[in-house]
Length: 107
Ligand code: FES
Picture 1 (cartoon, rainbow, N blue to C red):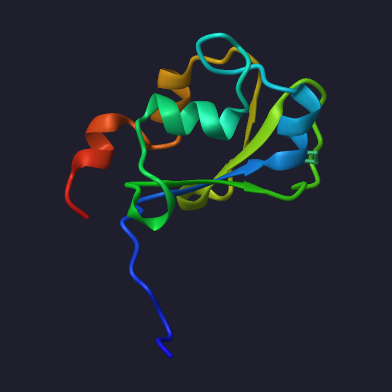
Picture 2 (cartoon, rainbow, N blue to C red):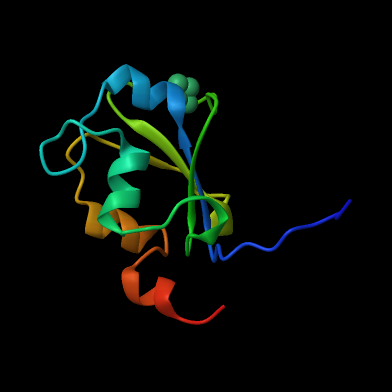
C-alpha cells in the first residue's frame, strides 16, 4: 500500500460546516449556496485532489460566530477569517491566496 498520494492543491482552505449549515446559504450569485460550494464554483475548481486548491468543509472550529462562517487558510493558519453572508468572493479569494492567477501558476 502506498504511504502517500499527490494532489494538485496549492492551498488548503477549511470552512466550518456547522457555521455554513446555520446560515443556510448566504453566498453565490443568488445567495442560496453554502460558502465552500460558492467559492469552489466561483473559482471553477475541479473536484477532490485534482483541483488547484482544496476547499474543505470541516467540523466546528470552536469560534462559532453569529451570522458568519469561520474559515482557515492552511497557509496562514494564525489568522482565521469570519466571513459574512454576501461577502465578495473575489476579495475573499484574494485574502485566501486563491486568486485565479495564483492558482494557475505551476506548483
Ligand atoms: S459552528 Fe462554526 S466555528 Fe463553531
